[in-house]
Image (cartoon, rainbow, N blue to C red; front, side, top):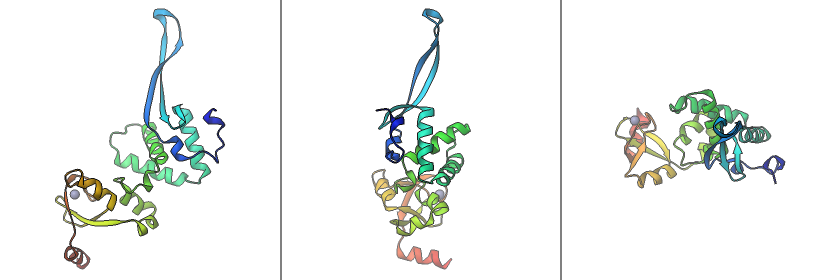
Length: 184
Ligand SMILES: [Zn+2]
């Protein structure tokens, strides 16, 4: 069955999650030495390989179906500001859509979980499991998720600093340190 025939009500974000980008040359015209190709860019998903325009339009339709256009805009803003390796608006759009398909904003392991949700969906953080830490680069205490801390334990206790984004050492704040923070 073609994915385009799947009713939008049955389509899930996980169906459109990107496993990896795909690309292959497609013959446009000619034979023998005169063959002309263009490069076809696509995404491998649970629905199979989709051409980029197909993936984008399915995902945009799904985002609209769930009334999440605002989150998509926020993810674009985020990608534009935080991801320096994205150069064009097309790249920003594609990246933000791939984050949306992965529902990254619901994943406590995501490095942007605390700052993104604090800015856009603060209610999420009310029930999130958070830990106060201090890094060696910045003097202020900051919050990460328990999931991020579990991950950091496997990475020699190094974490992305919640203030400046640098990778470095950290420790969990003692109750005394937190008390001091509150008094400042
Ligand atoms: Zn720092």
